[in-house]
Length: 170
Image 1 (tube, rainbow, N blue to C red):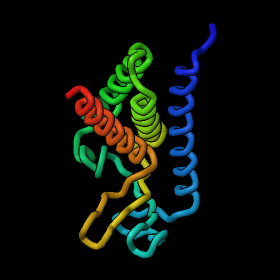
Image 2: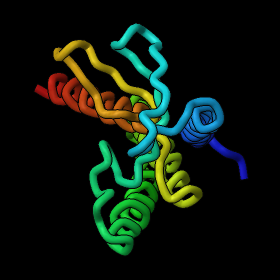
Image 3: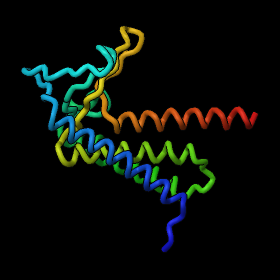
């Protein structure tokens, strides 16, 4: 069976997204003190106080949402449901040959980031987050990781490509 350039592109984006996320998390876990309720952990300024690196273990989803759920609900909402959604998205991009390269890249980034965080939940029971941006009240993020960044970037690209398609159609 010969793989198409398109399938290779999808696989490469997914694999590179997972690899960069997992490598970054291994480095953070090995080198930055974990922030806990008793230990404030290390805060490493990357660009002053505007861009900081730390080590936080997140038992929930985005910004810790769902961390207070009981174990059964957490497994359903943070493992089973994401795996199903990621599977459907992967099936969609493999079958829909009309998708442009930007959309393929965006969907593949979302899948890779999703898989990377699901892997953390399966392997460690939580997700390692380590980046934080605070632009002095103008813009402030929660603590996130490269998988979150890939998912968010993919979503932004999809919105932009969708808006461009609508503009061209009108």
